Image (cartoon, rainbow, N blue to C red; front, side, top):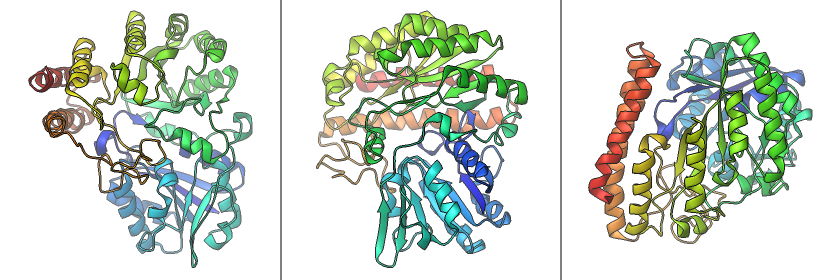
Amino acid sequence: MRCVLAHIAKGVDGTPASPAVDHLGLASLAGVLAEGGHDVSILDTLLHDVPDEGLASRAAAERPDIVGYSVNYSNVDDVFASARELRRLYPHAAVVAGGSYATFHCDDLLSADTPFHGVVLGEGEIPFLYMANAGADCAMWCDIPGVAVRTSDGIRNTNPKPGLEFAALGRRSYEQLSHLTRFPRLCYRVAIESSRGCAHSCSFCSIAASQRMAGCAAVRRLRSPTAVADEVRHVVEAYGLRDFWFMDADFLGQPSEKSRVLEIARRIAELGVDVSLEIDARADAVDEQVIEALCRAGLQRCFVGVESFDDATLKMFGKKTSGHVNIRAIEVLEKFGVRPILGMIMFHPQSTLAQLRQDHAMLRNFGYEKTQMLFRLKKYKGSRDAGQKQDSDGRGVAPWEDYGWEFDNPEIAEAWEKFDALRLEAMDEVFVHMTHEFRNGQITPEDFSSRSDAVFRTFGENVDAILG
C-alpha cells in the first residue's frame, strides 16, 4: 500500500511553527509501516516548505492509497480544508485522521459532511499498520482495535489496546531529518523520546484519558538508556544535527526512575559530542543531582508545567505540588544555567484577582520571556476539566472556540480581555514579524532570541497596569 502521512505545522495559537521540529509520531508510524512492507512518505508543510493550501496537491501527486493527517488544536481548520481538497483532487485515497485531537473528537471528524473515512484512536502505529494491511476499503477496518470508521449504520469504533514496548516498535523513519539540515543551530530540534505515558492525572490534561481508553492508566513505558544514546549518536553522525527535544510527557518520571535518567545523562555525555537537549518535566521531579548530570550531557532548556504559584489553584488542578515546589524547581534549573520554559494556567473559571496578582508577581520576578505565552485554561476533551457541567459539559474545546468556557466574573473577564490583547500583540511581533525576518536571514538566531525576550519582558511590564 502507498501511504502518505501529512502534517500542517503550526505554532502557539496557530502562529508559524518555531523552532522547526520533525514530527516524531509520524516518524514512528512510518517506521512501522515500512517494516510491514508498505511504501510510505511524510509531508510536513514547514520542513518541505509547502504552503498549507498546497499540501493536498503534493499528497495527491504521490497517488496514495491512504493519507493520514496529524490533527491538533492549532491546525484542525487547515487540516479540514486540506483533506477536502485532497478528496477533490484524488478521490481514490482513503483519508484518515489521527492524534490527540482526533482521538477525542472522532464523532466530529466522522460526521456526514467531513472528508475523513476513519480516525485512529490513541497511539497510531499498530492501528494504522492494520489499516494498511487490510487495504483502502474502510469497511475492512471496522474491527481493528483503535480505529473509528463511518458506516451506513453510523460511527463504529473499537477501543485501542495498550501501546507496544519500545523494543517492539522498531526503528523510526529519519526521512524528515534531511530537511532539518537547512536550519542553523538553535532554529531546529530533532524530536526524540525516552518514555511514553504519564503516571499522573492532572485535571486539565487528556493524556490520562487516552491511557485509560487503552487500558494502561498511569503506565509508563521506558526506553533503555543505551537505545536513547545510540539514537543521539546516529543522528549526529548521519545528519550533523545536534539540537534535540525529548517529546516525553514526563521525562524525569517517578522517583524510582532517577537512576535510569542518570544513566541516560551519563551515556549521552560519554558520546563526547556537542549537543543541546530540551526536556519536559514536572516541578516536583526537578532534582539537583539529575539536572547537573543532564547539563553535562547538554541540557539547555526544560519545560516545567508549573501552572500557578497559588496553592489553591494547584490543588484544584490535581497537580499534587505547591507554589514553593514550583519556585524551587525554577531556582534549581537556573542554578545550573538551564532555561526554564514555564507552562502557566493563570486564568481559569475560579480565578480571583488575588491569585492572578500572585502569579503575575512571580512571573515578573522570573521573567515572562520564560513562559509558553499560554495563560488560560483550555478544556481539552477527555480531560476531567472538560467533563465538568459548566460550559464544556464533556464536549471539550470545539473547533470554533479557543478555550471551551467563559468567565462568570465580569471583573476577571475584563482583566483577561486586556491581558490577552497585550499577549496577542507580543506574539504577533515575535512569531510573525520577527520569525519572518529571521527566516529571510535578516537577523541572526542570537538577535532573534534577545529581541524576542525583550518583547515578552515588555509584555510583562505592560501587564502591571492590569494586575500590578
